[in-house]
Amino acid sequence: MPTATRHLTSRPARDLCLAPGRTVDGPLTEGGRYGRMFPDLRAATFDDNRLLALGIEGSICDGGPSDANSHIEAGQPFFGQYVAHDLTADRSPLRAKADVNTLRNIRSPRANLEALYGGGPVGSPYLYDQTDPAKLLLGAGGLDLPRNQQGIALIGDPRNDVHAFMTGLQVAFIHAHNRLVDRLREDGVPESELFDDSRRALSWHYQWVILHDFLPNLVGEAMTTTVLRDGPRFYRLSGEPFIPVEFADAAYRYGHSQIKGDYQLRQGGARFPVFPNLAGFLPLKPEHVIDWTLLFDVPRHPSAQRAKPIDGQLPTSLIRLPESITGVVEVAAYQSLAARDLQRGMGTGLPSGEAVAHAVGAQPLTREEIALGDWQDETPLWLYILREAAVRGAGDHLGEVGGRIVAEVIVGIIGSDPESYLTNDPSWRPTLPSHEPGNFKIRDLLIPAR
Image (cartoon, rainbow, N blue to C red):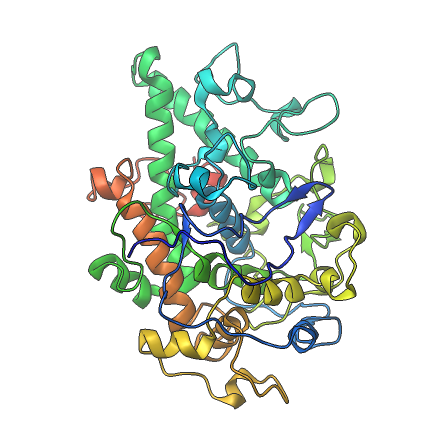
């Protein structure tokens, strides 16, 4: 399917600003790396005020304390956010205001940790340890990112310092790369090949856990197996891979509904909401350094905290974002991340959830299952996918519409990457130690197995 090359004509929704001058969303321009998965479906349109009313404080999307538990590890949605940043990383020297011709020349999306490695030791020397250039640089004590004199992280993608969980994941991946350098050096890999071999090894382990841990938890084992075996049906590529707006602006925003009201980060420590307490772009406080055994299940440790069920509701901290996170807003509804997600979907011209359900051959949700009160229109795709997860996936994983979109895009992007393990050696298996032999998971990248 060729990607579209026109600008979106609908009024764009506002990006979520997590600090003054910093946005975490990709460009709303369509072309190059952005396109449509269902180009023949018409855009769903809604009354602006009624649409925003679905996402404001006291609405159907207001989950209050959001202290319910799903069966999914609490760390899974944060790893998913890291993957999102990787897939949508700006691979051009120009940023989100690039025009269509520039966007056509941006490298296609990949799951290859580019935000970790930047331009490599030569192109991004500030990310590397000059005493051992094959290794990535860490902050003082190895618990934080390296930072400049004003506390701004030296990092390939500033979005990976947006809150303590992203900062912690970036730090954990730096440690994982550096451990691989030590291991390969002990194995006798020549210094001239050490960085490239370590990068390839970490990227392949990362792709493995995306496909064999993260994706089954997110879309279910059956959907994962089907798409890996049969390939994508609707994410059809005639050239370079692209990011469908149905993925970026609806299905992959599932994680906003998995966020709990607060989290324990340290054994015996206090609990914190993500915003404002754990907001980033500043040196990481010692009490915000994450013990990953509290977010991912590790053998011989107590069970980790769980994510909130995917149900269309967000915690108070995301429904009432502070001004330090949003900046000054003209419309009170924009204090809510749910309202922003809803309007963004209309701004990018997304079809309704019911329309996509018919397109993929799924049984559409009933009015009772959607449970939006007196709402009579078709359902915004983002909210439809969350309600589908609640009633068809028990709040643990996406249903057929959301799961199909997410699985096809992720498998399609990794499978079309000429440097991925799926392309080079599909029979490859992880070689790093794991806490449970033969079952390498996200936790094994973050918490070294002995």
